[in-house]
Length: 268
Length: 257
Image (tube, rainbow over all chains, first blue to last red; front, side, top):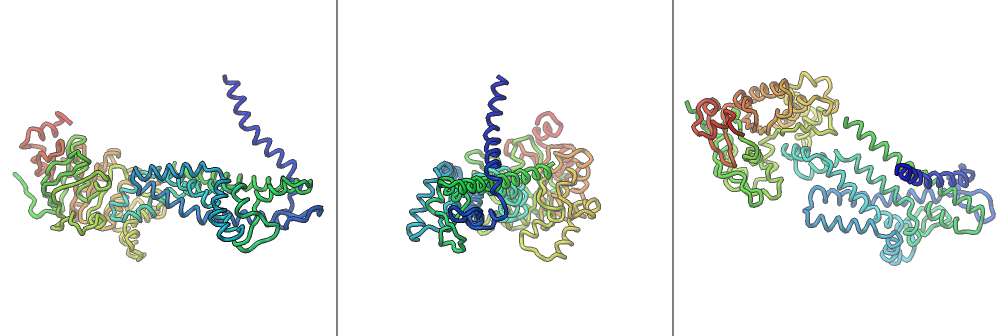
């Protein structure tokens, strides 16, 4: 029994090791300064980079945070501090269903609601789709960490004659802030690698873009486009892009670990 | 000799509190004397905490709660239609059983939080009020050199005195204390009791306690609650030496409860 369990545990870790091994072996050689600063080169030309895709990913994540964080956090505050059991049940149910909606469906919905009325693919549509995907994730984690704030703090503030909204904002949310930030970072890490919803919205772009109304590139899109191409040069670039994306997500996850560890330290 | 309070700080008339269909407090009438300590005693579940929380409308945090009757704070009906609970709670402060300083704030921020969140920005006033409140809570000498340290770095007894200072800083007229020393060691408990005796020169204090000795030592008047009813109310010496009700005598002598 122990041997089987041990084998399964090793089986869990193996893919992670394989992914890292492959990405580093095939991608690391293409990573240089140009990869982070230059545009993709035409087929056949050596060199070039994914600078626009890297910047594009950050622009998309920024927009997504602008939409997902306020709506998600305030929704979580409502569930934890204001809602009644009946309505909360429906909101949680809706959020859980939304969390399970396949990402390509999100892409199609935003295509119909944003891309078609605007007559074109755009960075804005890409930001909106990622933001919408973040909302239920952020909302549920916010609700959970707010529930962890002991009721005694709410009572103490209310007993001082502090109004309810100030108690919620200045005492409850402030006490749980680290947990809320953690939830936001995890949601960002989750949507950073989304490809399918961006295919119908941000589309991708081989140039620098500075307008939100134009198509924009993103790391997952660029990886996708290069990976399905028939050129060896592009395949190598795709591996390098995948490596960068993986490190971005890894960086966010490590930040989360550090944040949560600090929290334990300050409690003891 | 029976001592009767003359003009009441809190005049409670026919107060009943319900949680859903459950009547936890039954037609309680009592006059709380100003600048005196009134102890509320009784076995668990007798409604004494609910009584205390009804005095500053904290029981309303339970959405099932409902009350009938009347409570006047120095003549003002605290349940009047146009009175917000927030206003009542500024005049009637509360200290809880479990000390609950805000963990994200320093000692100074904790003491002044009630003022700051009610719009006081004047730094000088905040500093003055912080020192004054910490002195009244007998904590100033222990923390004056580390006002900007985290509040949760204090010991349990210090944290509870910090909570008392925090309640005093908004200058309430009445201070409610819900078993303020039950989680503390004997030394810290003695400090809190000394503090209560100090504070009664300025404040009206109502304290819920499970500890008979504490009620006898620290209070001027004692109210005995049983099963949601006020069984007996009078001077503490009378309640503890010659109660007029059999149930009171049984409880204070430890025969039940």
